[in-house]
Amino acid sequence: MKKLRRELTFALINSLIWSLRAANRKLARQIGAFMGIIWIHLSRRDRFLSSRNLKIAYGDTLSSRGAERIARESFLNSGLFLADIIRMKDSYIPELTRKIDVIGLQNFDHAYRRNRGVIAATGHIGNFEILAAFFGQSGYKTAVLGREAYDRRLDQILREARESNRATNVPTTQVKRFISLLKEGYAIGVLIDLDSHRVKSELVESYGRLANTPIGQALIGIKLGCGFVPVVCRRAQDRYALKIFPEIFPRTFSGRPNANILSAVDITWRIRKILDSEVDIDPSQWPWLHNRWHTAPDYNASKPPGLGLYESQNKKNQTPVRII
Image 1 (cartoon, rainbow, N blue to C red):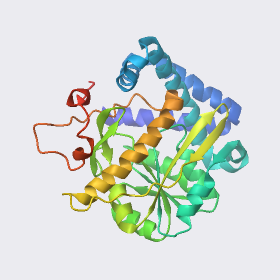
Image 2 (cartoon, rainbow, N blue to C red):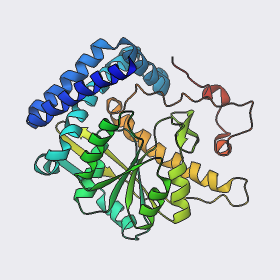
Image 3 (tube, rainbow, N blue to C red):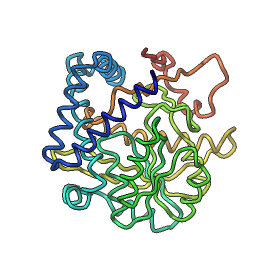
């Protein structure tokens, strides 16, 4: 039964991919928006989870009605982003290059030209897949670190879309390859805003709560002397605003236990503050369906290495949130 479900899902996705690639961008975006609307109406649970997570993040500053509105818009945006992602393999150069407004490219160049590798840190903000396509097609040595899809055929589709725009795909399981590319001076895009146990993670503050956050890339990057550059790509009507922030430099915690972990947690936290502020500009461009605070901080167990950075936080405000 599970295999049949997967086959049907793939057949549906494959048909959708064919339809979006056959259409022009205007029609493809309309189809994507329609898909988002259908998702909103069919999945009551997903609507609830998104609204609930928004209320967790913004508290009393956001009304329940406001949370529901942003949740609906986030599904609509997901459909719009998906339309451009699926078409990117064939349409990036003819369609999207003239639709991207870049701010702060000099910040990226400054780190990239040292040839020590760049950690281009971002989150699931706006259409993050365009970041790799932009840098790859602009002539930078570019790679993307990402988890493999549950279906190898879907993974192949995503990998081909990235590689068609000169961005090397690196699964999170291939740590040695990740290190090798950084040593060759590659800029590697990493997503650091989801709760994941597949990679080295620590508790890092986000919206006033501790969130399980990937730090493996930070540990490696600090050791290799890489540059850390936050980047985002948000939608602006039918265009994209690609924003590159000034480089973030690691701080040392000499003399403290787990100093390397503390440095990695600290730089990840500083980058997350930047990314969270970008989410605040338009919260509907982040997937609130995901509960970034799912992993519970256990205050009865030994402290996670990075927790000392947040001892000023009130434990009452750090209550883990689990949504079933």
